[in-house]
Image 1 (tube, rainbow, N blue to C red):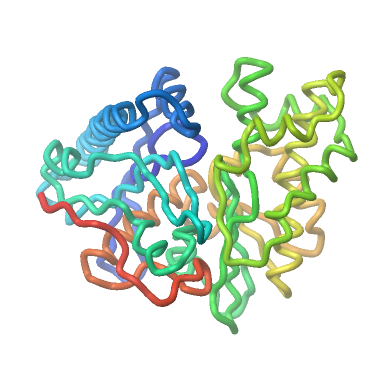
Image 2 (image 1 turned 60 degrees about the vertical axis):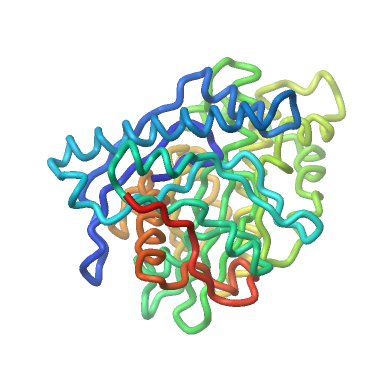
Length: 359
C-alpha cells in the first residue's frame, strides 16, 4: 500500500509474486478526507505538540490502511490468512537525506496495522538505506527493473506523483534512478489555494494561462536541478513558500503561474532525461500525473524523437505501479533480499529494507 506526497489517499493492491512475472490481482483506493489531509500538511512544518499529533495521525492512518485492506480482501474474495505480508510505505511528512541531517519520517503505526489486519506488516522501508549513507529514495527503480526492463529497448520510467522520479532502464548498463523535481505537488497546492480544488484536472486551468519565462527560469535555477544523482527531494524543498519566494510581482495571474508550474514539471523531467539517460528510446509515465493530459502532451512535444506513453502499455495501469512496488519490496524483506539499488540511492551497499511486524 502506498500513500504518497500528493496526500490524496491510499492505493492498495493485491499482488501475486510467486511467478516470474508479478501479477496484479486486485486494487482499492481510499481517499483522505479534507481534515486528515490538512492535518498531515501541517506536520510538514514545525508546530505545536508535533509528537502527539504525529502519533495520533499514525493511529488514524493505520486504521484507514486496515479498512483499505479489508475492503480489498472482500472485493477479491481472499482471506487475510492467505496474505504473506503487507508492504506499507506510510505517509511521508519529512524527508531529509542530507549528510548533516539523514532522516526520513513516514507515519504509520505498523504494530497497530498488524493487530487490526492479522497480517504481517513490513514498514519503515527507507531508513536502512539512509543509515547506509543513501538517500532512502527513490525505492521504486528496483521494481521497475523487475517488471519493465527490456532486453533490447532503452526505456525510462517516469513516476509523476507529488514528486517526480526517473528510472533509467538501459539494457546494457546498470540501472540508475533519482528524484528529478516537483511532479504534481506545486501545481496541486497552487490550484487549491486559488480555486479550492485539490488538483487541476487534465491541466484545464493551466491551459488558460501563459508560461512566464522569467519565473520559469527562476524556478529552474534552484540548485537541486543541477545536482548530480543520486538525489531525492520532497515537500521540505518544493512547497508554496519556496514558490512564493520566486514570485516577483503581485499582478502575476494565478493561471499564468499554474501554466508555469506545469511547464516546470515538464522541463525538469525532460532535462533530467536528456542529461542522465543518454540514448533513451522510450519514456513511460506512471503516477497521478499520467492523468494530466496537458502535461503528457507537453512532455511528448518536448521529447520528440522518443516514444512517450503510459505504463498501461507495459501491463500495469499508472495508478497502481507504486503500491505494487511496495508489495514487491515487502517480499524482498520477508525473503531477506536487498531492496535498494546503490547506483540509485547512493548507499554504501545493498541492504534488506524494512522492519517486520509479525501477525
